Length: 299
Length: 328
Image 1 (cartoon, rainbow over the protein chains, first blue to last red):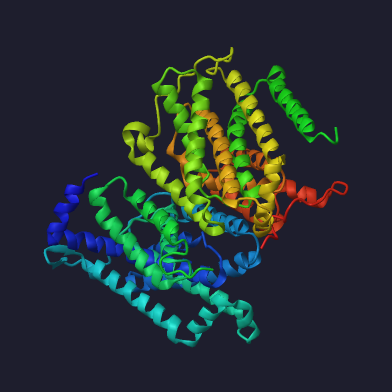
Image 2 (cartoon, one colour):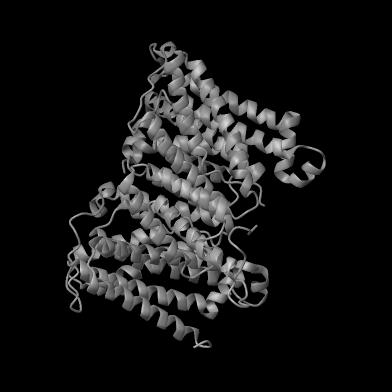
């Protein structure tokens, strides 16, 4: 424990900016993954434990697409779109067979997918770590904000994630599709009875969730290394984010992802070895005080 | 013996124990003995979890915490004191029981999904403490230096044969105790809570007290399994308390059958055997295990023992509880 170091950091603007930026990066990437988890849970009442796999595969697809096309934009699109497609296939081929059955069965299917794709990634891309490297367009001198160093790629990444948060929030509240999705979350039978094709709707939800996770993986690839087990850790974290924010709430996911990001950013200074522990303490505290999460509705 | 289920269970346990103890007299196979030692730890772990999952309907994702705690408490007691092995083992189980009581007091306030989340969070907190408290636990390297294997009752635990006998006896006695608990009025109360908690509450059962008791008992037996695991690896590792280990126990329970008492034991045996066989042929264990799980979850849809009981119902025996795959 090193509270003095934290105090020293908080008094210099350079340190605050640097740590806040790294916290924002963690938080925004987490949000992209957790938004899918929370959306899928909100509508389908399925806890998608395979969501980390989408993130991992998105990163690897982007890695290969960058090698093939030399364009980072295309690589990100490839990662996101392929995972949207993968999400639909996953929902149609596996998850749709266990709707309404025991939660443990759903958990097992997701767990199986995680195990299978971790090994498939090892077979296709090899078990070693891969570094994607910073795209050429971003290999420029960093920005200095109030004395803190902010690589331009970080700024763009935060911008993209923020944009998606806005689009997702507005899309859910303003568009017809978004309203249908929200209605289906409350009463799927009634929505179906009113003539909405809920099978298609569920597939769309999985496509959006998978696409967001793939996007997060592709965006994270230049700043983090790729490895076959990378889905596991982000899964646990996005899961914590969803629980803290409230299962099914996009706004909750954003707030708690940023909260976790900040705990990571500043917690590493005060408790370098116990940052994970801090996050679990936050999660336990939220569950005890408000089990439905900060923004969740009591079911 | 039909009217004396306790006697019948004890007879079955005695026969099983005699068979297991007799095997090395005819044929010594280190691989088989290793397997039984690991199975005895895993069987206690999975069966104690099933007291929660199958009987009480409480899906705990954090059961590995008590397995790991039992292992660490036992290994540390043996390393740091001169207590004899049984005393250290009892002490480790008592510590685990107390921890389960404290964790349970917090967790049983929540039900269903939220119970699963909070048990997972508490377990991960425990895991982070193991990793970060390096001076006591050895951090991510695990507790090394070995466990002094002092002789007890003529058992020389440094010998594999004696360790095998010791683990088999402890596991069979532990399973017998769990069987008694699940067949007792208390076990029936748990199943009643699982099936309809409002009605059980109307009958005067204090729900949280029954759940807390189940959680504590399950934790204690997981701790006992952890003691055996620590004896086998001669130390303790953070992986014992990590969440994939809890996942493995859940899968053992599901694979064997949550509505059959011996289901988790069978599930644990299948998992361990699969692990031993597959890792001999390929390094892609996850690929094979994942495919097996998929085939199981989409094809069989019940644990093996549950499936057999559904396929060949025995006489007019009433069905025990809702079926694993069809529960809402």
